[in-house]
Image 1 (cartoon, helix red, strand yellow):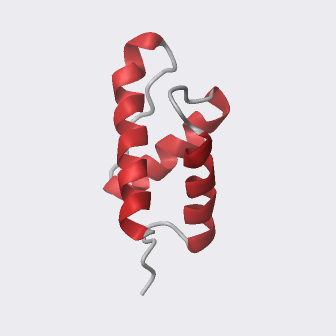
Image 2 (cartoon, rainbow, N blue to C red; image 1 turned 45 degrees about the vertical axis):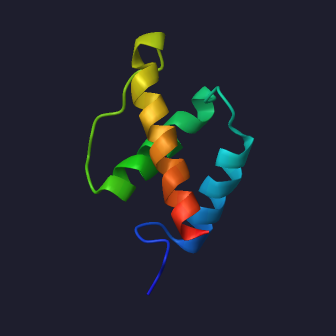
Image 3 (tube, rainbow, N blue to C red; image 1 turned 180 degrees about the vertical axis):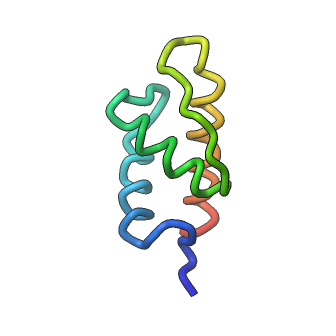
Length: 74
């Protein structure tokens, strides 16, 4: 059994490495990747929000959920 499901081990490692570099700002080049992982982890196909300040809450939830996922599997 893969403890990283629904991600592969290499995807998990990639996510882990990116999250370590993220403090309070999510770079735009990571948004598609993070949202894809976020949807897969939750088992949904939610449309990606824009990168404008009004979507900060969505992105904060995304990063928080990804951090939780990584922490539970380390």
